[in-house]
Length: 334
Image 1: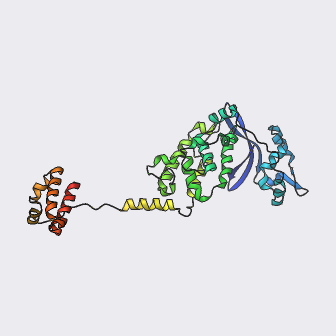
Image 2 (image 1 turned 90 degrees about the horizontal axis):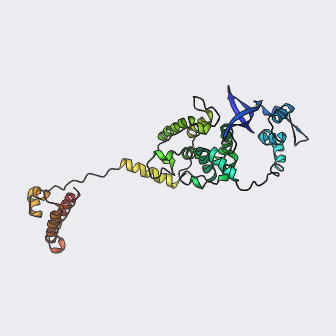
């Protein structure tokens, strides 16, 4: 059982829904009770901390075969209680929780069949904060246990609740990681630093990933996605638009400076130093055309011979030696 919301003419309406199995490993959502825009109408506070729920609401949950409906409603509508009531109830809220132990073989099989890869990526990021999803196989399968037997609608509301821990500065990393957008980029830092990548390209690849997910029947199970992009998927476009960059880290500044430098800097073209034909003949003993026609081996042999003659340590002319070395370096690069 979970609480769903729906926007109608700018007003938020609340509905209590459950997941119903329609086929093996296929679940659909079903509305049990419409709370309207104000769920507070369906409970009263008695003796400062005792919550009494509406009889019609309890009856609807009993008809849906919800066990201990009052306790479930207390968890579901906890956020609507007055703050002083919340503080009192927190003292007793989690006392009945028991350790569920390791996964059974049946649960492991259900996880393999029911949990979509996008769900696993979301769990992996929310648990470890890892943009690089190359070690997704290390995700503890116990993290997937709450998703067993849930419809797509219930799962999306589950993740919506989990995503409340994300700050606006983490939105870009989150959508980049869960839709595996790094596969579209060739930069060496693409797997871990999406902030340094072009935002418009990330947005374009995200829209394409959402379009494909809209058509993925294994993702929606027994739900109908519709022709237009589903509101559950529109949520991730909203995340990308509302991303607020955090204070730049050293890695981000380094990557941005590196990219900017590669875009602006160009190695200057190496040109053969100019020398008059007479000086060229004086240095090398051959003409420019003859020198350019030589192989690398012949050029090196001649250079070493002339270097012994022109080197300043051997009593040669320092200026001519420098010109000769520049000409040799330029010709060797060709």
